[in-house]
Length: 85
Length: 351
Image (tube, rainbow over all chains, first blue to last red; front, side, top):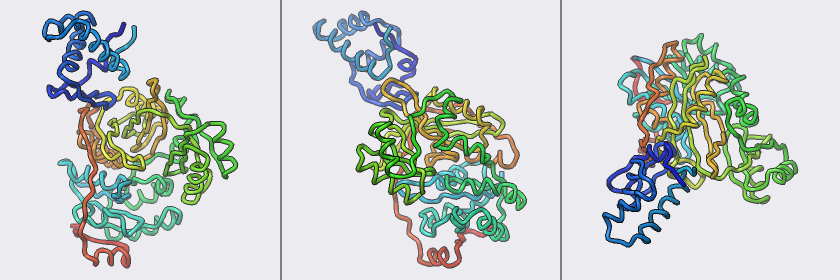
């Protein structure tokens, strides 16, 4: 299980999808879904809650959403914005 | 406040010296007024040809000519210029200026420089010992005095290696052929010993700071390079809040009672471990970013040199970006004439 760390909570998010880490200077762009996932993580939502939230708002199957969210969280973990519990 | 400041290091090539950034930091601060006196070793340093930078500039003897020659030149310059503060920005000149701090003070020229002992402790060759005191990791190093020693050290440390001069210059070597070539280049320019440092792969972070000489850190700004030249020098960077590096700067200022400006260069490896790569005993070439963040370290240096207590914020905004750019300065050949024949140039007269 992974949980957001201080660095994730410190990320500066722009509506354009530009994301900046003020501690490391890392910057990248995310699409609408990626941005939404980070916002939900910052609100303290769990993996299951994020998948459920997105399923309710997007016209895509559960499995596809589950896979996309899991892959995105894996990228966040690689960038050290999520800690392994 | 009116302070006449003499600044060295006016090179502004793709590998710039810090002087131009220092002068801009002072000139653009509403709390500063006075004259800027540029000091250069070479008549072709680009900053000498910008009439908006120094009010007057003088060529000074190369560091290898020693402190006496330097002092003689300062006596000469001091006869024509009011100089309140000297702010040196280059590694190889520092030792001479440190040795002359009292004599220059007698001429009314104040500086705020580390002691020879402080310089020695932060030297590249002594970094492993110091890193322990400030609780940072350092990559393994070896000092070599010829190619045979370099080859043996490369077998101990393994490639890739960073090949460094005692004062300046660094190259990355991936094999023995590159190693020999770079060791010879550096030895020819800076002499032996040459330093071989194990290369740490990861992200580079930098910090500019100012120590008050009593163990306190006046303030500091962290920067992440976001664009590099082909020589690995920062071409663009962004201000960040790197907690690990900011805390290390505080420990450094405390452990060494560091007096003056400094730069920390660090690498974070892929496991998130922070390695101290170098401590430069002067402000970096990107110091204008600190001023842009509201932390005017060069002005605070001047205040310390004059015995005043600088009041700088410790907090600044992460996400302020700098980008170098090149442009052409147009000058008259009479400027070059003045620098080459009179060893000085004057754009504005003093009052």
